[in-house]
Length: 252
Image (tube, rainbow, N blue to C red; front, top):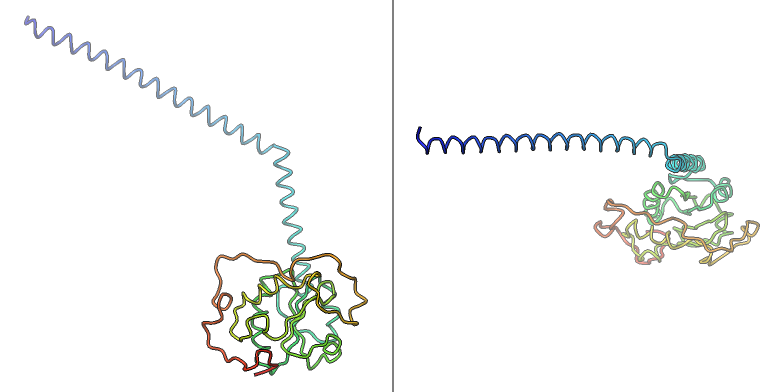
């Protein structure tokens, strides 16, 4: 037999044994890894079961459910009081409306005045966005008693009430840039800053019987964060709207 052939055969056998051993070791590693994964999965399931039975987690969940329920009940209560929409009221309804909610925005208007119609449009847009505040309007011609008591001389006039007390007012567009094409956001910013007790600028005998406000409150509406806005909300200057020569004009 050729010595070289014998040597080659022995070498091949040795290599085959090494490969077989390596294959067995690899198979063992795979089996061990699979067992480890199964054990980890069982441990995770156990941990999840423990979490589900955690009394603190159950309490947090119950508290969250209770908070959501309370919020829904409050929203329904406000809706029953007329919140969430811009409504017209009568003089007979006025006192009940402004004392029936903590925060009220009331627009005294004239049906023929162009600027009153502009104000209507913006307030109608804000009402559903600020559910905690009531938005109403009252025809000035049909409410002579309160027009006199509140000293209203220029329209549109938006008066802000907190617990029945008139705390601030917006006369014409003088605080909105003095022009007709202001954005809804401009009016919203004004209302966010105004209407708290610390900025009260006037009082009338008609409301002296209501509870006095001594603490400083935030504005008549709260700041809202939104990702997308419509054109009317963000910018009024894109539209061509007739402006008054007098910024505080009662009509156009």
